[in-house]
Length: 222
Image 1 (cartoon, one colour):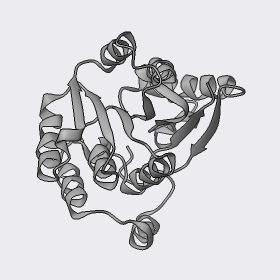
Image 2: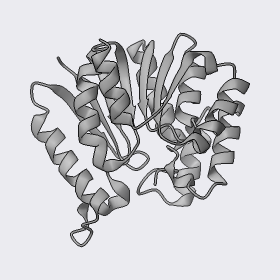
Image 3: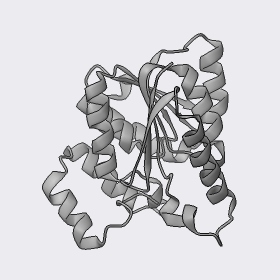
Image 4: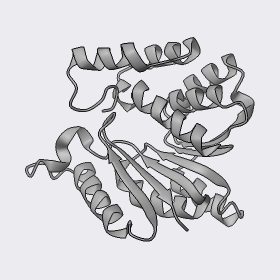
């Protein structure tokens, strides 16, 4: 649901890309391949990934955590832009991540990416048990929506003080304000957004940005 930014028509979306996007050819090839797939809407929009890249560079990130990797576009863009960045990626699909592995290898970044094929919460619990609290500079969450709250709680342990936790799809193509949409994912996102807002004071800085399908950025206090 986030191949482009919410609220922009095709002309304005293209203009945004024309005057702002700087995308390496290796990333463009992966994005184009992904857009030809049936589940193309699972990829993060290039302008959103470029914002993530900027934020992570400003953070001086060296260790990142991605929950929901799909075909690996976001991690490819980040690792190509930051030669010292190492990523831990969580996904359950061998099919989709096989495409990611192919492009990571071609771009010579695969050696800096630890891909865990397992339910994301199991991987996060394992990282916490292994003593990785505070080991990550940022986490990017773009996976099953009903799992977001649990993922945020785990990332609050795994991400260091001053680090970022970022969540994709929080506007859900506008469904979060549709009173007639009470589907499981929509309700989960509504409840998540309210929960994050209520917990924000004293715990983290909060910004919900209408880019892609809605991006929440949290800066952890403690």
